[in-house]
Length: 159
Image (cartoon, rainbow, N blue to C red; front, side, top):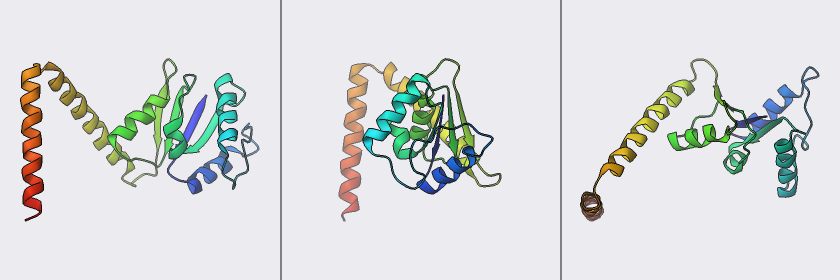
């Protein structure tokens, strides 16, 4: 089971044409140029979940709503946003021993942005661990400090 997510409908159509070549076995879900209705989307996801369809090609709008435990590979095609979206995209591959792949043109800067996202993800997890180690009192003080700092910054921005 393989969903491929792209950054827009143009890339999605291009990728669909590529995988629809005679050498590729693909069950067409809808017209290449017509958006799917919610009913059609549910039908295709249902077929994907039971193995009647083994490849989904979707924009990131659909990607965010996909929750299919049978998915074992996620391929993102030339798309890098932020570390949260990266973690969510990787999370679409829920099957055991699943894989997350980023396809991008060489020299496009996409891989470098993905590397930055991976670094930010590590920092995010370190921050979570630090907060979890705080006592309730220390946590409360930190929140008050951040709130005060925010109020001061807002006040000085309006001057």
